[in-house]
Length: 381
Image (tube, rainbow, N blue to C red; front, side):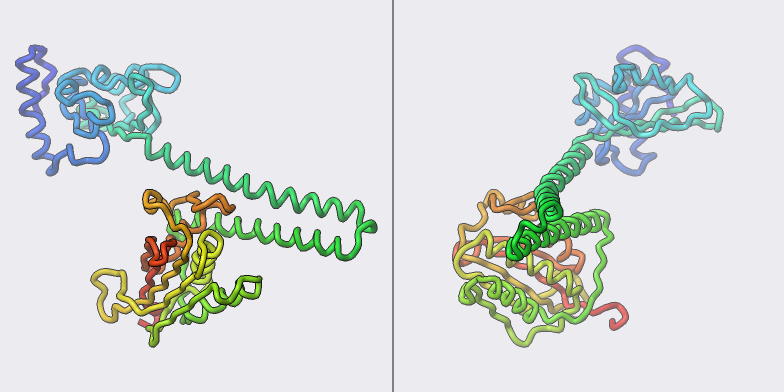
């Protein structure tokens, strides 16, 4: 490798900038400008010989301006206490046993945060540093994740506070003044406590589901599922709770392929979609169960699937909100809810190998359609 730092004349620097990238691209076997993260490489003299497109984007410094400059000037980083990073770490004159700097938050000029890690390349374990390879990553993705976690904590705290306050209030009142209440009053307060306890239980279950979905640990225990009968059970429960029977229209295509899925999780999907239609929609809630084509591309053998469409005749979902329906905390209206249900529904459908979409129903309301492959458990395949 030609060490460029031996010449300080502009002509020598230009020649180095013209030749070094081509030489290094050939060595790497790929174009560093295609990397998603910033890549900065300094030679044995501490001058920048590689500054890829991502590094230029993250630092807002053109590559032509950075190449050939000393590393500490091309990449003037400070830690969160305002100390100059390269003077603090001293990669070329520091400990000979040091081979890297772990990733940490540092500041670019102007106070913009960036995630930085570095590798010290030596020809021998205790030899001088031949080059310093620096990786840069924008913190925006991490900030979005942190904001999402903060929103989740705030939402959970808010949703837990109301039922727990109610439970505490009623139980404390009953314990202190039990004899003063009639049996009907006691029953009413205990029923309220029971309903609030169910609400807390549902919220905890949602949080566990989100944790498993995000970590890829949501398990599916496949069994034969009669999805038409499952939908019927949900409709009967709503009718028993006071909804008019003629508000629901169930159409089941026959014959349906045998569906193997996790019955509890499919019930969770159906419950959420039908509840959304009842609570946020209007008019008739129509549920169509039909034979479909498997959403898994390139599937060998039987590619049949089962599709379920839930639609209503309400105002529907605004076009600009369609792409946010399955994200966390999206709420179709102000009628309560945590905004986590549809996010969980999407995770459950996808862990089954299926797909779910949202659109506008023929009657003008919202239309949710999920499709599940009929795959059997592995031991029956």
